[in-house]
Image 1 (cartoon, rainbow, N blue to C red):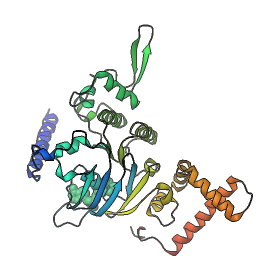
Image 2: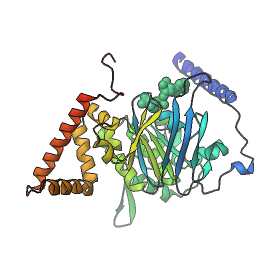
Image 3: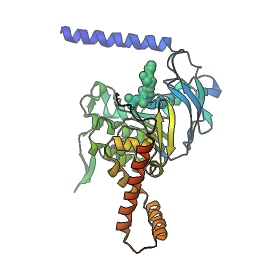
Image 4: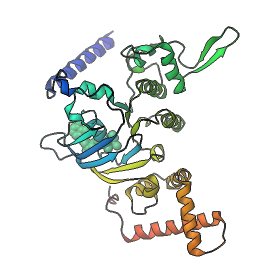
Length: 361
Ligand SMILES: Nc1ncnc2c1ncn2[C@@H]1O[C@H](COP(=O)(O)OP(=O)(O)OP(=O)(O)O)[C@@H](O)[C@H]1O
Ligand SMILES: [Mg+2]
């Protein structure tokens, strides 16, 4: 009883603290200003332009993001990597103005996000974080907060994220639902505690599918699920969110290795922004170094190779012409690998990149 009361009190205090936080927040422009509303369908393409973005948490603090500028085209999938504390989450949060830019701007489909109301902004973009947010209620109320969708649409979204299989049970045509959810009215406990983390993440993905967001930002969304669930989620994202622009932050390099491009943050600055193919084949790149550190350089390189057979074919062709020999492709591939390994080691031995850990770290 005492424990329960204490918990209740703590929760209430938490709410008071949160209210205080909102009061302390700088007041935003009222959503009533007509020009503050973006067009109803914004963003329709999903182009992102970040210019000279500087973010600091306290007025006198050092900036956590420094002069960040990059452009992402619609439907691109960008992996964002970098050491702990390099500013990845701060960058993700800047898109939702959870941390306001000190300088610079983020423009999405031609609209500077600092000019639009927070509610508009936060409902038009989607963030999927490490802790998927579910509310106390039902599956229906969690998927369809504004009661906009038909039941069959809700079931379809659950099916597409593989949370349920739906079979027609003959002969009367009744549908048989197989999976952890048997009814849209199934209860969801506070925080979704009656579902596993992976299942919660899939329910959030189903919600994202329904909303058809053009911009999806994932911050370590699969960090706490096992590798198999991670693969499954990445597959769903590849298949179901082909028309969205995706920024995917991940410590697990395998999660982002098949991105169109990879943005590497280092101490709040962009160290690299290029294709995985170019970065992993550049012996001086910080990305390659992070791959080495993860102990997965070989398998990551192989994954890149599978994604870019044409580039590797061209490499074999160049090599073959250069050496004018009749060795098999396999022999040549091994030889190229050896050459690259040698080159990598030489480079490292001669000039250790400046971002390497110092020995006492
Ligand atoms: N609310 C905050 N107030 C003050 N400083 C903060 C706050 N949040 C983050 N920072 C600082 O900003 C820097 C970047 O933090 P951020 O969380 O963006 O890093 P990250 O790259 O996401 O790290 P991780 O990989 O550990 O998630 C860190 O030095 C951190 O101490
Ligand atoms: Mg983070």
